Length: 301
Image (cartoon, rainbow, N blue to C red; front, side, top):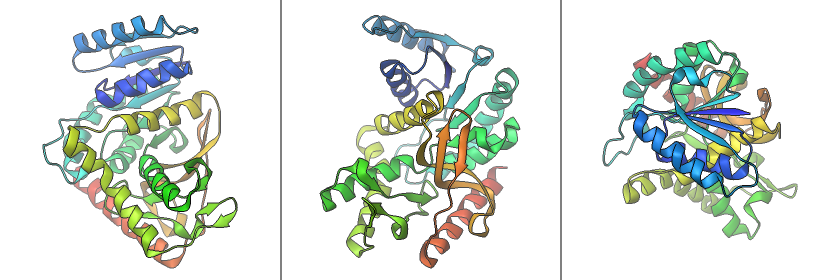
């Protein structure tokens, strides 16, 4: 099982290290602009994997070395401006970067599942569909997966229920127009009531990414593990349900955009898109998210 990671920076290397520790990949290829650094990262991981019972081959490479990959993960990005408050400022630069990367990926790994991590992830996931020509079930972005996990962690403290036992999703845009789908949130089959206090938790979760970036200069562990969660579900055919950014085709009247909705992820990529029954307020929030992402797509496309 081969995984190629394009962009072995802080996020890409947390992903590579996690995949190695979990032993779900047998070969990991690191593709980066700085080949020397990628080679150093690969050597370091190869030395570390000697402590594992199941060896994992890790090496640096070029786009052509993605050939035969079951999954390709895109973490590459233009530099993030200091003091960033809006991921969309990266849109134009990252679209140009993807235009130079993704057609080559599609050429050498035409059967791969593509996981987009780079921001703004919703707009770039949409562009990835156009740049690769891959079917929608094989292109997905990490979307609101980390936002949902942060939200569950906060809800867990309030409800005194383990986060794994909560079914609560942040949907829509990975950005300002995300929203909690409280009308379908549950714990043990019991609805989690929608209260102002719980809505505040969503706002806190929304701001955590920018807060972490301001304090340490990057975000890497949560998003790196989130990407590993997606990759593992594909490689192991786990068919886990998670909110990811995928092409929307008619859900709530929305089409022509990628947004986060709950999907089932397995060996074929997105095995199924779920369609929760949202209330009117949540439907309107979903429509607003679609318009916001379409605007970004229009500006870069």
